[in-house]
Image (tube, rainbow, N blue to C red; front, side, top):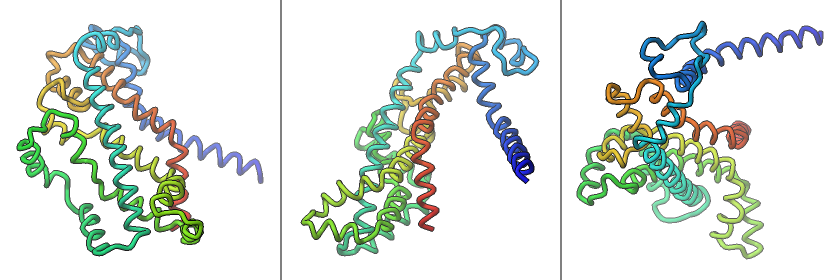
Length: 281
């Protein structure tokens, strides 16, 4: 019986490994092309039998990427925008979620309804009012123009509200008996309990901010204010003026490193948050 179970487990692993490998082939292909000479890629992009082995191997694409051009400025802009947006979303979502879930105040249900209605409004529908408003303020081509419109996220408020609503009332009541204020309950009790959910929200927000294309395309109009997504798109749209396919692929690899590293570091918190949400359901 155990041999059949072990055999079934092996078959399951093989069955899952095959589609996983197929899913990663484009990424591996991009990584391989980034380590190949541009003069060779100008003739063919599959100079080996598999097309995934960088032969001959070179680091010239990465060296030229950081020696010339504005890629490092785009990278820095994305780091600043994504980090600032993530911090603002966490602060606003946690405080609003706690207020809606644990506090009583006038027009609470009305405000909650208006907040959740934001989930039904496509972000593209508010581009024109946002662009006009920020143009009147003279904020375009700046960090705050890229960060502020994405600071209030209805799904973040909803996620944190659901988490705080699931915390047992006995914990809060015990703290109030000890004379703890509402702010102290939020800061010293609720926030530590909500760490898995906040890290999950932070990762999702960072990924969204890092990969955002439409609003930076509208607001950032100067090359020095581009984020990585806009900068890479400009390289690909002006491919004749770029340094070759290898450098474009190297730019894609560099742009992917932060988000991959972020998920690898915090993946256990994401799994814990998902498991906690499933147990509540």
